[in-house]
Image 1: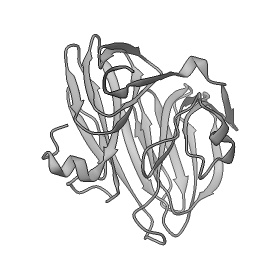
Image 2: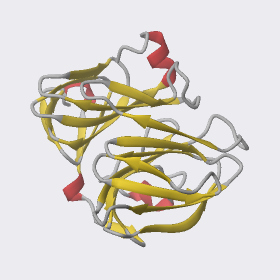
Image 3: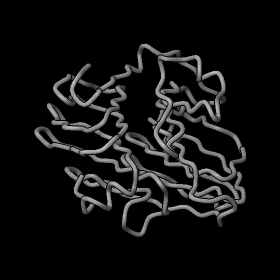
Image 4: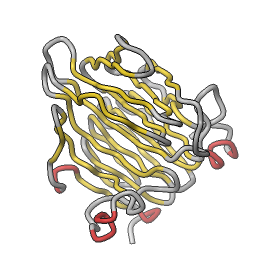
Length: 236
């Protein structure tokens, strides 16, 4: 058994898929939503209300046509590129990478997403179960700062409340990220050492605790239970 029960899942070991103008690899799939995932030991099955993560990109001048969501909290992290958004919560908004938009689908929304500027746009999309059904739909945009972990869902700030906390960081060489609690993390860019093991772009890391140090600039998604974040003063 490795330190802290660490498990690493490599994106390149999983099948490439997608739909419409999105190319993606599904890396976290909770069997409650995807029954076929119960027979797949190659993917992560999530943690608490964290039920899905896909890593991929929007094709240039393409994307996902108008489609519905209901009773799910969606974190869309755009590491590079620019993504336009249209739908029942507003037309003409955009996410400039590196940036994040969080959508609370609640009672129901419809939206379309697509690349801008004639270039592909990288995407990490993450789904969470909401704290209760039938909430009022809404969305929040976040600008990420280098060298910081930004809480975009859950936690103790002015984010949508959730059982889970999602933090996203644009870490620089030598930066660290840590938690003493159960977690799932995704490295979307760069190289690091997590619990003594090398990790790089496209890796999922999960375990009982995390000690991560970056070797290069590194984009990191870190997910854990909100209760544990509050216990330690949001320092993880």
